[in-house]
Amino acid sequence: MTANTAARVGAPGRASTPRAPRNQRGVRATDGWWPAAFILPLFIGVAIFFLYPIVETAYLSFTASGAFGGSTFTGVENYAKLASDPQIGRSLLNTLIYTAIVLCGVPLAVGLASLVNRPGLRFAKFYRTMFFLPYVAMPVAISMVWRMIYNGDFGVLNFALSRVGINGPHWISTDGLALLSVAVLGLWISLGFNMIILSAGLKGIPVELYEAASIDGASRFRQFRQITVPLLTPSIFFVVVITVIGGFQLFDLLFVLLGSTNPAMADSQSLVYLFFNESFIKNNKGYGATIAMLILVLVSIATAIQFRLQRRWVNYV
Image (tube, rainbow, N blue to C red; front, side):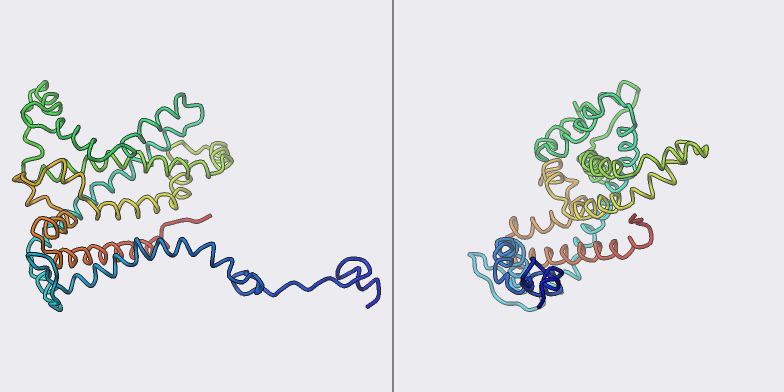
């Protein structure tokens, strides 16, 4: 090889050392086991804390627990009971109602995020902090506070209603109102988290689009409808998915706010509360595991449907 040829391919006067070929994932063949070593702790954690519990729960769903521990294999008996249990339908309906009410907070969060992120707004960081505080607070502590607010005898809510001549009901011990009260609390807690996520999405929208729309004479409402909402759909989609998953996991707010001895609990219980009641109160862990598998399947189906439908309304720029 001549010097000119060597200069074109590497250092002057010598040929450059050829690089090791890369596979389709961009990893060199000479990298060896180092890439796997870096991601191995993550896979171990996922296997121990996620995959193994799912496999163990799936196995328990085919067994029946004994009164003094142990289990016996019963086949699909638990699933047959699941199909005929009237509590499953009621609990599923309650879970869907709660999820639907909490989802109503997403449009409200979009509006609040747009207001808080207005240019020149004073104390914007303070407003974001105040809205976000309920989300980072302990759910049990928040539920205890709202339990006093909802109290039918001396609660703050009924006191405020009495000042305008309205005799407030017993919110958390009346069928129908109890689930609604829990859902309103869940909406209030999730509002701050949704608003923070949507605020981050708003910061990614170019200001030039609003300036061009203003020059063309578009009103603020039209800018919000035709610029803000379409470009914010990826963040809205993320918030909707998280809200739906959280709705199917309803337990702590329901358990603390209503209590297990509440007469309205039978008509307000969620799927997760039913799982808790069967597994840890009645000690029927096999049937409880079956309910847990049902929740897993429902969450998976709901998430898959959302990812399928997002192709029609989410705009990725």
